[in-house]
Amino acid sequence: MSHSCQAIVFTCIDFRFHSAIRDFLVSNSLKDNYDLVSLAGVTKGLVEGDKACSEIILKQIDISHNLHGIKEVLLIHHLDCGAYGGHKAFDSLAAEGEKQAGDLAYAKELIQAKFPNLDVKKVIARIQEKGGENLIDFEELS
Ligand SMILES: [Zn+2]
Image 1 (spheres, rainbow, N blue to C red):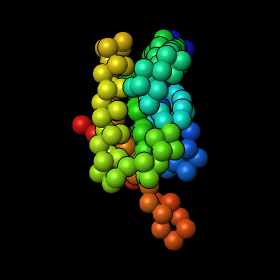
Image 2 (tube, rainbow, N blue to C red):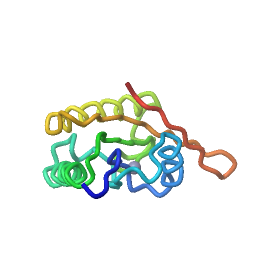
Image 3 (tube, rainbow, N blue to C red):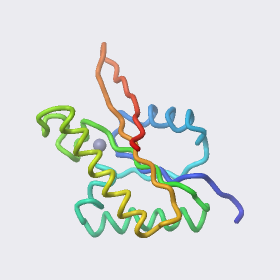
């Protein structure tokens, strides 16, 4: 293999998160060490059984695995995701976080059924607006 990297990262398309996600990945020793896929809602389509979306996700993992020898899949969901209807679609932040955690867990199961040798990590990004700026923090779920 001529070149390899550690991970494939799945993020939402949401523009508010890109620089924070990049910083997060750099601080987790993944600088220039990951393949990147952006999809609205990240794994929402996979979890809901959307055939086209599932194929895209699994195909990108397969290519990344074969081409770059990745060891892990990083799924980065976020709160206030438009694909889920944003904050307003949920009664509380806790309920929103639970829905995202549940979808991440199921997505991990579906991905590992196909790629049992890959480590699948689940991350949730939270966004808060303060003084006209978006503050974003990340939590890796166990
Ligand atoms: Zn989103």
